[in-house]
Image (cartoon, rainbow, N blue to C red):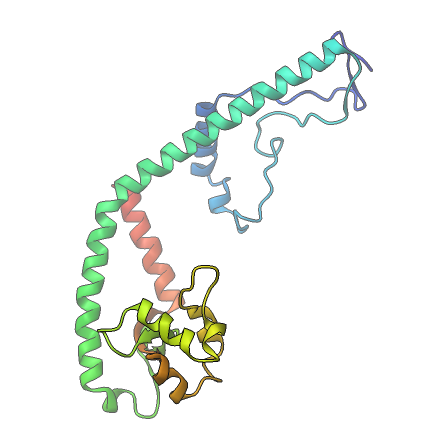
Length: 243
């Protein structure tokens, strides 16, 4: 069936997507989310959920439309242009809301970070001082609220001497027959990724000749247990929303 603009619809009674302002879209989503129908309150991951304008009450899908004339082309392109501008406005409104939320929470996040670092440093000091007693033959300790312990951090490439520069290391690698495999091109620099990939093959003598070493430190950690952590996160989020 064709209408006056020359746009044919294969599905009778199918309407085009209505033009809704970015502000109205944001308000509708907030109202629905507050009523418990938003993604936040569903047992569905927001990343996996598919947006459905019909399910969200924002109009019917425009399906089966066919352009049959120049006038229909002008009308269809005009509608698409309007919708794209509307989409850009909605995205801008979303980014502004995210920026405002980040600004509101920034001070509290910094305060919490400082408190965590201060308290974690004291716990780490105690655990290190009493490591043999707390971690006999193991690296973690299971406490009521969290698991604390030590885990091996990722390996890194370091200079053996602080007096050396990376340019000095490059020259040393250029002087040995195997060193070219660990230099980038065309501007030669130390290829740390290549060195780390071959760290089990390189000998101590080779590393010493280049003035390099591999370092892999232990990292102290405190990991909240899931049920306790989830409850605490909900309580804190509730307090923040009340403010």
